[in-house]
Length: 311
Image (tube, rainbow, N blue to C red):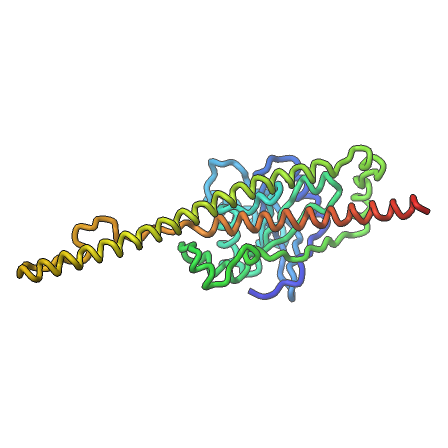
């Protein structure tokens, strides 16, 4: 997996992607078509995938292959280099998205996931971001052992799940003229206060994410207490068994095995998965960065207005 400098997205792809994500619900997904050049991915086309929950991964793969074959027959670029999905407030950080991106990066090392956020789009911001799983997380996810010890050994934390790749839009002059027709009126934007849903939804997502993170931490704390309690019970049992064996030895009776009749006392307690906590923490980091960026811009505008009003 090489270091990507940026992801280049053509204007026509941007229009198709936004239209698909705006016209469908939160399950909108699709494939990105293009080619890989030196330190960059050039996305030249895209197509949507069926979002019906009854369609399995195999059916989606067959559908994608047929679409690529049709593009090839039309002499268009037909190489899949990534995928996109619609996501609200960092909701793309779930197990299914991780598995899909992991499998794609195994086949296509530089494959990216482009995420469309409709709340940012309504607020007048750029709604697309490109991500890729880090090499540390790929190693961590390669085995179904998502323990805290393994995460620490591989140096995987909440900042090592996804790495954001710079995304650049390349438009022709005709595309720029077309997009200018949909540019919002700044006075209309100010009157509608379109930033309110952005802040509200992000704060709600932060609140829910913190609740989930606390729940995960409580499970981890409960596991630590259970392990400690088991060790104490094992020590007590070993002391009792040693005393009993000493008496049996004095009587000339056979000694008892250490684990005989202990049931589940020496059975390993399964640790809670660390994967969910990593994803929730990554989501909270992303939401916090977006809020910090937005609030910083807003504060700069307020400071500018205050300085102008004083003059």
